Length: 186
Length: 394
Image (cartoon, rainbow over all chains, first blue to last red):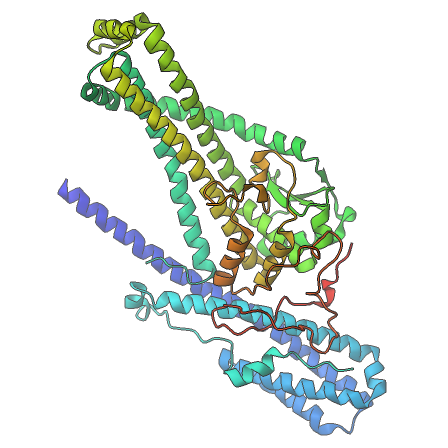
């Protein structure tokens, strides 16, 4: 009788541990999926930028400085690897794009251009999608990070390769810039 | 331990909890069997101790009978269920061409999850509601009201469809059929057996004696004598215990079933966010639905409704659905959603789409600051995203 109880308790503990392990694996998986969702949106934005630059060039070729800033920011964003670096690079890009749109104020022809308006709409649409997928990613990371810091997972998480992940986020001063989507002025 | 720190853990824990609740039903069935055994034992009018011992001895023999009964009942309910839904709601099926907007949103969701698209139906009513039905593959169907189609924008509609899709993926209809069968059995057992033994005990003492003699329980003759005098002390106590068991079991069955139903609603909300990755759309859909979801239908179907306001009681113990506020609170807490607060009751009527949806070209697409949102890292970012395609299409 006593032996059976010991066996049952051991089995229950084993089930519990396996369940925790499986949960951690799933949570890590989900953060991975969420990150690729973010990446897809970011890539779409990166792909739009050259088009936008070309369009603006057609109307305001001598605004070289602004256009180059946008191109550079875009290239930096494409090259960024970690979520943290990516977030910073995306911020730069957002800022540069904002300047570009501000610049269009001075060029009525550009502003009236069908192509330009289309790109502008697409970009603002992408900003929203990026914001949504980023929020989902950060929520997943937060959940994963909390889970590996809980007892009893915390005892083994590190040695089993569950390391905390970084948020796709920036510090507060920069956050404001990300949050305000490109200022689209007419 | 197994805490909820976000959407996924919240979903898993809710699943565990509703499994535990489901496991409660067989326990209730066992309780009912014991009650029946008590009544059988009481017929031979032993002392209380002897009666309890007899009842415990008889119970195992009754369990297979009870399980068999449950299985048959379940089969009947399984097949009747679909008929009831089809007849009672007055919904009519649609094809892609009837409402491409609705069809496409659902199709996209299904493709992203790799599941067969359920069929779609529409009910022509101004109420804002939706439900999933069907108990097996090929029969699944999502029904929405005309009012819902008109009042919600595309993201909100997507959130609602994802909610119903989660009900289907979680096999919630089956679960509710199972729960309904158990509640039915427990109630029926109570009804029959509380009235039955009184009849047997006080009117047909001979029958009681004969039974106990045949079964080999002691004291058959004594039972007849006492029963005819109407003063079987042991029997009366046993019957009272049995009645108490039936009453408690009946209450517990209903509470269990409703608690499970509420868990499944929370689960479907969370599943919706997981599918659409957009907690705000689910929240604003719920806000619009609040106070406009009333719609006549049989109780069986109302349990599958998106919201079932008639049931919001004071304690919540007898509700089929959690309150809208509780559901939104859960979405904010676990899904990182942001709650814009209750809508003014007028604006959420059937035709207007409220001010949360300004033109995307406005200098600040997301105009007013949102009220305190308690996402994991607090800062209010973009409120319900106004997408260019978010314009309501009638």
